[in-house]
Every structure is written in C-alpha cells, then in structure tokens.
Image (cartoon, rainbow, N blue to C red; front, top):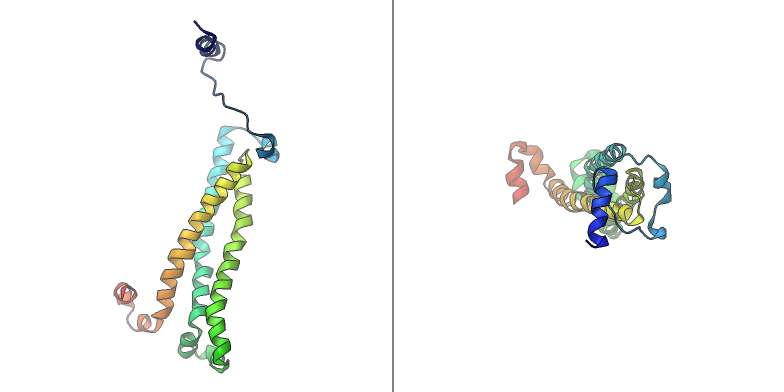
Length: 180
C-alpha cells in the first residue's frame, strides 16, 4: 500500500479516531488574542450562542430608534396632530423641507454606523480565530440588521407615521389602512 493509504490507518490506530487536518491559515489572518482564550468546543459554542443572542437583541431593539427616524420625515403632519410640536410650524418652509428630507437619512446612517463596532466586538467575543471569520460574522450580522431595520422597520414605520391620524380613529383596521 502507498504512504497515502497507510497514513489514515496509522492515524486511527494511534488516536482512536481520524484526525481533522487542514492547511494552516496565513499568520496575518490569525486573530492571536482569541488563540489565548479557552479552546474548548463547549465554551466556544456558549460564547457563539451569547453573541448570536446579543446580535438578535440589537436587531430587534434598534427597530425603535430606526422607526423614530422615519417620524422626522413627517414633521409637519406630526406638528398638526400634537400640540406640543406646534413650534415646528414656525420653522421656514425651506428649512423644514431640508430637515424632513435630509435629517431622517443622516439619522439612519448614524444609527447604522453605530452598530458596526458592536458587531465586531461580538464577533471577536465569540472566539473566531481567523480575521476572515470575524469579518464574515460581522457581514452576516450587519446583513440581518440592515434587512430588518433599514428595510422592514423603515417601510412599516413610514407607513405607520403617514397614517397615524386614521389609525388613531380606527385601530381595529390597522392592516387594511397600512395596506392601501
């Protein structure tokens, strides 16, 4: 038999189970701080589960501030509905239209930028040993954040704030009102 066929047999006899061999990562790709941490698979799974739970919590709870950014696009309508916001009607029309068009976008961009460092630290907390795995985890977390918050939350809250007066009169008809 060839050496390639003999190696797995010797390996099984020595260890009791086949070894999992793969090429070593490039040294610049290793996140050395995570190599110092506990390498137990159980601890890794627990840390990964905590990181996933934290990402899910951030995605869910950030929906509120993201939805509030959409209320900035309807300042005039909100000022007409709520007496404590009447001062908005005194702002010049040109300034108000700039605020309504520009401010929600800037606020949403700032909120989106705030979560990236948090997601990076959660990725490193989970115990990833390679920088590319940290980046992959960051991209996946950020994808779900943007999909849920910058798409669904923005669309739903924009419709909700646009139909706020009608919803307050007929709360039982929320689905048909938002669907039109």
